[in-house]
Each structure stands twice: as C-alpha cells, then as structure tokens.
Image 1 (spheres, rainbow, N blue to C red):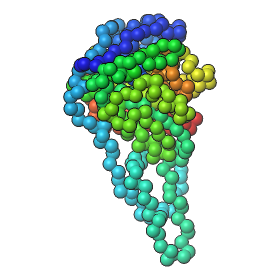
Image 2 (cartoon, rainbow, N blue to C red):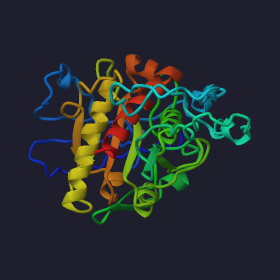
Image 3 (spheres, helix red, strand yellow):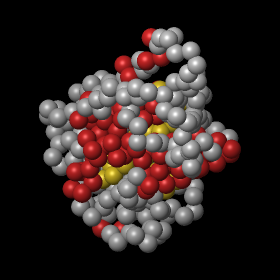
Length: 354
Ligand code: ZN
C-alpha cells in the first residue's frame, strides 16, 4: 500500500562465493523484506527451486492497515508459581539444557513465599534460597530487534528519509516489511516473537533490551537500531525478520552476517559464531533452514545496514517466507511464534555460554 518501501540497491559482495545478488530483500535494519535474489551456485543441496527465484520488482505490502489479530500481544499468561514446599535436594543426574520448560516469568511472578515465613520450626534445615531461574547468563545483555513497526506504512515521510547505512552509504530509515498473502504483517510477527523471546531470556537471567517499545509506532531508523546495540555494549544483537518471496516452494529461515567487517576481525568471528548458534538453535527447535537462499541456513551479506553499522556480535534472521503458505501458517500463529522464540533462545543462550 501507500508507503511501501523497497530497497533495490545491490552491491557486489566481496565474498567470492556469492556471484550475483540481484534484488535484495531488505528486511529490517535495511530494506524491504521481499527478497528477490539469485545465487550462482546454491551451495545447499536442499535447494530444489533455485532456478525459480522471482526477480526484481519491488514488493508491495498490501493490507498493512488491516486490523490484524495481534497475536503479538498474547504473551503467555503468568502462572501462579507453585513451589509450596522446599524440595529435598535432588540428585541432579545430568546438566540441564540451558532452557528448561519453565513458564516464562512476568513481573508479578516474582513474589517469593520466603518473605512471610514463620520462625516456628527451629531445627528445620534452612531452605535453599529462592531457586534461580536458570544458571545461565547473569549480567549478559541481549538486544532484540524486531524488524519494522506497525505505523511505518502510515508514515512514508519518516521511513523514507535516508540515513547512514555504514561504509559511507545511505539507506531509507526503515521499511514497511512484508506480510503473508492473508495480510498478516511482518512487523506483527517480529514483535510477537521478540516478546516471547524476551520472556524466555529474562527468565534465564538475561538483561534484554528491545529496539522498539511497542508494535504501534514508527521506526526507529536502521542506524538508530544499530546504535542501541553498540551503545549498550551488547553481548549480542538479534534482528528478527520474515522474508516475502512469491514462491510457494521457497521456505525456511536463514541467518545473515556482515561480509564486510564493520568492527574488528574478532567481532566478525563472534558474529559468525552467533550465526551458527542461532541456526542450530532454530534447527533444534524443529525449524528448517532455507531451501532457497543462503547455504545451510547461513548467508554472509554486504548490503544490510543493521549489520554494517553494528560493532557487536550481530545477526539478522529471515525467519521464514511469509508468502509461502507453509511458513505463513507457522509465522502468523501464536504457537508458531513461540516455536521461533524458543529456537532463538536456544541459540542465544548457547552463544552466551560459549
Ligand atoms: Zn523485514
């Protein structure tokens, strides 16, 4: 609709492997999420449809103004914390996975019964201090960047303004993103997953910073989003997007890193590590790598502002193809978004522990 932005700027990648990048989706920190790309040699053996990639035309995003059921807001409801009695010390047989199936905790889930305990029992062995949520990542800072925003489409003047994109280049401030063919917008998907992921990570003791506070605002611009991670000295930055390619057989996620080095070589290596961790976390969560772009779920890119401006370990993820029915069903449902969130959390916590 009005205000749709597409980013067709393409640069030759430095990486020798990528021979031709035609149109670039843009998700997020960068451009529109509708990607039309060709790769000379799809390294993934799973790619069965690489020749059928659509090329070119900027993708318009219909229906962004439609009233979409915002499953994004449907955060998992807090459960009344059970835990009535101090359990005897358990023989812990094996190291637990970083994320357990504990319910995500919310603000009001933190009332420990310990406050009003009574001193009538003299000889009782002191109950263990409140069980820590997960022994993982205290003090770690994670920036979650949910791509786009709900009012971007209504504010073309703001989101079309050019901003710094790194390496002396400029890009539009932000874009509208893509949507499913039924009109479920990318910004709602990214917001829904981001909030669920925030819950999981905070329950594990991670300090989470979101690049936008709601799904009904405008922006922020890509340079501002990157600055949030840089200024916070984040341990990692995860930018969440959804792709929009008009091909029903193109499905799956891919995790993108910067092929140009915006910070140090060491930071680039950490970003590559993060990409593998996120990829593996999503696979462990039951999600499939892309069968149409990247290689085995990974893709080095030289044209994404969010990556090119970041001085922290950073990846940007196209979580699936919202235009393909199979991915769309998953991406627009509450259960599906929880699945993505858990997959991301798997990768994030694995990376933080490494
Ligand atoms: Zn996007």
